[in-house]
Amino acid sequence: MNKKLFIKTFGCAMNMRDSEHIITELQIKENYSITENAKEADLIIINTCSVREKPERKLFSEIGIYSNIKKQNAKIGICGCTASALGEKIIKKAPSVDFVLGARNVSKISKVISIPKAVEVATNYDESNYEFCISKDSSFRALINISIGCDKKCSYCIVPHTRGKEISIPLDMILKEAEFRAKNGAKEIILLGQNVNNYGARFSNHHRKVNFTNLLQEVSKIDGIQRIKFVSPHPLHMDDEFIEEFAYNKKISKYIHMPLQSGSNNVLKDMKRGYSKEWFLNRVEKIKKLVPNVGIGSDIIVAFPTESEDDFKDTLDVVKEVGFDTLYSFIYSPRENTSAFNLEEIPRDVALSRLETLQNLHREILKSKAKKEINNTHRVMIENVIDSIEGRSDNGRLIKIEGSKEVSLGEIYDVVITKNENGSLFGKIA
Ligand code: 5AD
Ligand code: SF4
Image (tube, rainbow, N blue to C red; front, side, top):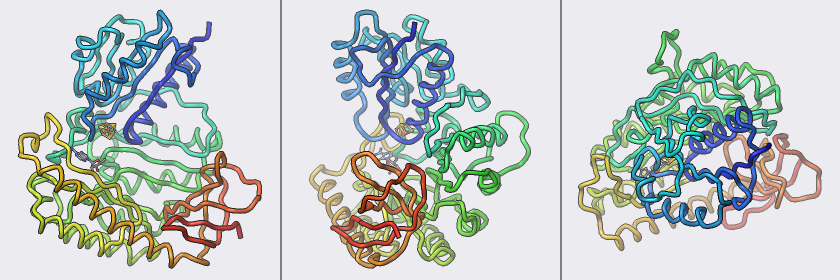
């Protein structure tokens, strides 16, 4: 009989990808089908994130909700980064949980669903050679993992603790998956890794020497793939070879995520980021010179414990200088098992006011950029046709499309920008 799986996913693209792997393994090997209704599910999975929010509170309240509404014999499984961090403590605190499966143990999903109270959370487990069932999903976008784990030691970040050491997935496996998805209709490939442009630094088995630039070149040879994106690159590994490939390879989307975290050299040092403000700005300058219309996004953490007012001003200066097109900004949140955990936190009101200042500055930057967009033409790939028609330009701008033309997901059109409302762009198909 067909069993039903309900899965709720928090966190980054990597976690979404892990959920896709879980779904495909269970569909193909265990005969599950997906349901959006937790009440009718035979298996409820919560795939968790622990990067910023206090994960425990949220996780246990979620478990409470699903334990109350689930069918009598339905199972509950906790996966992902919080599962890695808390392990068997989850089952001790919430006995209704049937198994705990950490990030990097996703390949064991078929096994754990039938072992009572299984806990598989080893962060040294190596699934880089595991051939996951490939999704028959025919959507226009395919997320493809290229590495697992992260070798960096950023002092605020929990990821090395939850996802372990960095290991690259063999090139042939990545290409096989990308080719399969392209044949099934994928037009856009998103390559995923915690530190995506460090690809090739370590393989678990013998592998010929290959780096991220080589991988981009290989993926772009695949017929049918029109746009290649990648998250998240690290500014430290943006060498000239990589930037030139990014600039000249026509299939690579001209939007790049460059997580700055802070614009102050003191704070960057305390965060153990491994680059200076000058290095970051030098990389931006080179990218802008080669790709004048590039879209640049970033992540910034405000109120890191050692951030002074002057340090924060340095961050604002870099934001003004670069003029990021997308900015994700966060208040520093202490995470257990990170080296900054014991540092004294900056008062909440100061942190909130810095966040607001940064976000206001960024809003102004976006407004002035949007004004200059009127009458520009962009190659837009359609990403949403349900509530409104929306797509993204090659340089990553979200554009709402007006007019009644029938369009399909993944198709690319020339769109002329007609209007800007508070930084949001509207356009018409040319
Ligand atoms: N506190 C606040 N933000 C964090 N991030 C990672 N760890 C923390 C933390 N402890 C942010 C970083 C990272 C993004 C995914 O989340 O900006 O790039
Ligand atoms: Fe969250 Fe980081 Fe895990 Fe992604 S890798 S789910 S952001 S903790």
